[in-house]
Image (tube, rainbow, N blue to C red; front, side, top):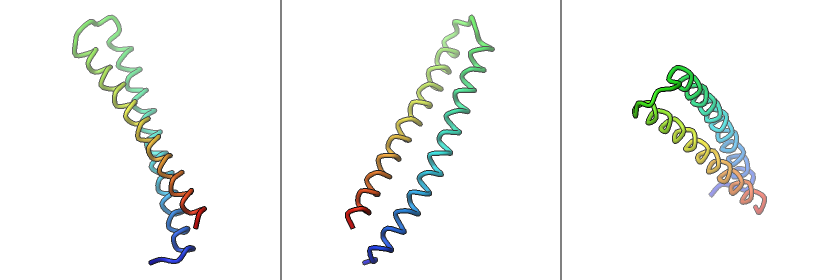
Length: 86
């Protein structure tokens, strides 16, 4: 089994990777929001079901990213809590 300092160092490395993932997810979420805005502009006034479906799916994707961000942040907090107890 790894020593305490090795565990803490590993947790810090994992945290850095998580933060990189969070940044990537934030960028993806912004891109989806921009796509949804553009779609809204070019389909304004349309009542076609495909347009409504596309808007809904983009919103669902953005919400999914938010949920994943929350999960990652909770994982970081749990790992840090463990590291502090060591």
